[in-house]
Image 1 (cartoon, rainbow, N blue to C red):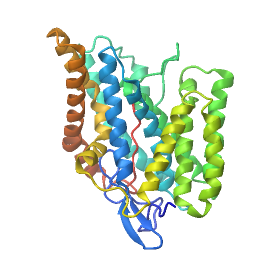
Image 2: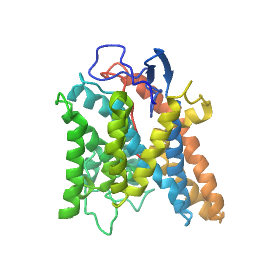
Image 3: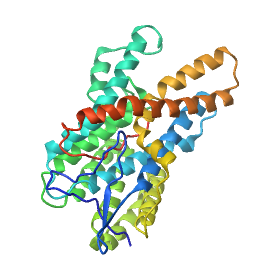
Image 4: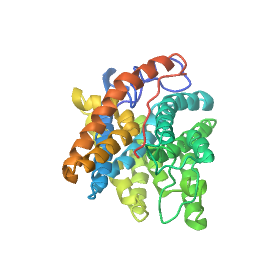
Length: 362
């Protein structure tokens, strides 16, 4: 049995997580109900590290001409984690604006900085492939998808990996809105997101409508129900009696098989977290988890630099993929230490409560 839930040490708009680290989370405190003992959920941080690393490897191998598609599944893991943690850090006293304000302060500043850096690169002529459409720039900063969805391609903002942040902000907005409800929040959220996905199937919308009705949004729902099972152990059996058949049906939909798989991975990690002393602390993997948001956002710069330089020097693509991956991961860790962590300290007092941010994959 899983024991515990994210603890709130003060009356708060939503649950507090001490020491929110830069990108991801400084592991939330867990209360083991019988023992009233606290421990940290290192396993979730490790999942984030694996997801971010996988995404970088996918992009590096894709640029080399042989994409390692399993790595792209880090996106799905990020979304499921996000659904879980938004449930885990909120309670009945949560309020929409404090929650949304905290999410915005946690996600937006670094994303805006990286987007601005990419625009400046394009302005000086180092990214001739990029079109600086003023509307596209504004919608990128506003987390609004812009353009047509053709040939099954994802609508991309100025910073290409930001398409998942558009999905994250949609989820945060919907989640903030359902916080006005006294009960049945997760059920209402499930109906809303399932309704959006159904609308996408029936109407085939384009532009923002296509981006906001993607089947991948169901991964937030799956993670949310795992979160409900975590925080409501007395209802855990009934939740899983509903969730497991739903996952089976879900596998018939696009991304459903992957979504179901990563949901079960999350459930397995939480199972081990609840046993004994939980999952042990391993600093290298923990650092990767802390830096995962920076790795995710900044990866485009080292990846492109290494491949452009390597191709001029006739370096074999396989070697380039390895070097580029190491450069992206190392550069992301450096960006976390030098930029993201100081930014978190700067905004620390402005944030309503320390939340847990789940960066989406690219």
